[in-house]
Image (cartoon, helix red, strand yellow):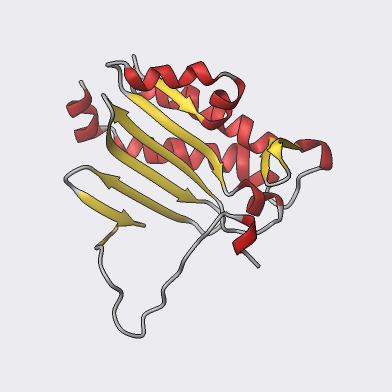
Length: 175
């Protein structure tokens, strides 16, 4: 079942991620009202209506694409840590962070993304990282390589003089 899905279902997952961002995240980008932003564990751990709605959207669409799969989403885990138990089962599991970089999202900065990974029995099989404000989609499938906007990427040192972009989410290390 999972091999068949990995052979044919990947474009549908990309479309589901893009649609969740288009419907639930981007209409709220730089448009959030104060009551749409909450703190979870403190001032550097934020959650927005976009986080919650995008996770609900992805949960519905991803489990429709792969019947019998489960979702372990950041917001669901925050509400109920028992959701983690799905990772120990045999069923395929979608791991979802609907708005990674919520602090940047709240601040109106484009450096946030939607993260989705597909795992089974503790092994990551595929991943999708979509930065909707930048229109950048990164995908990877175990044993098949990684791509950014359809262009294969390679690991290793950058070419001399090439731009090296680094991201960090720790508030003490950002300016």
